[in-house]
Amino acid sequence: MTATLLHLAALFGLLSVLSVGGAAGVIPEMQHAAVAVYHWMTAAQFLAMFAISRAAPGPGSLIVVLIGHQAAGWPGAAVAALAMFVPSSILAYLAARFWRRGDGPPGWRGWVERALAPIAVGLTIASGLALIRGTEHSPAAFAVTLVTTLVLALTELSPFVMLAAGAVVLLATALH
Image 1 (cartoon, rainbow, N blue to C red):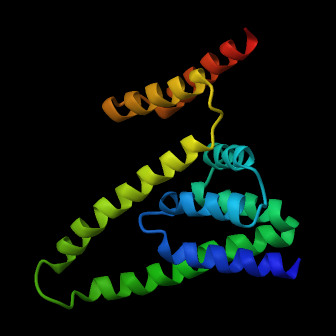
Image 2: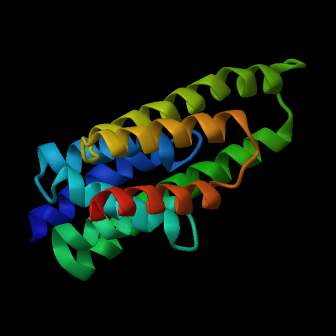
Image 3: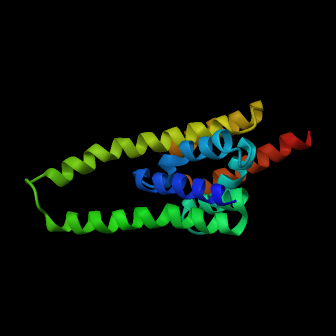
């Protein structure tokens, strides 16, 4: 169990400081480590935990608590949470202190923000692709994923409406 706790601390500690734009950017690596490297769960279990973490109140990065619990019970949940939130919180605090100082040439803040935005978007897209690969490969599931992605990208429709619609469609196809 100690080895598992150390693996959880190392994995989530590293992912914490690499999570540019939030934990969504490190979901693919999280999935790869939990499923393929450490075999703490299956791809389907990871996807279910991802869905639970998104549906629950609070930050979506709480998936780390579920992964930690799956890997090593309550001690694993605590280690995963601390490893994911403490390093990034310290880093954010230090960055904010530096950011407020305003040292550097004029315009450098805008340059940094413009440089990091596409990275955050790219990591988020990679997360979506990693999750799609972990889903059931039925035509109905792929259709719901595709339609939901297009509707949410092209409209202002609430994600909750799409969540409900997708659930109805997949439930209807499962009953037939």
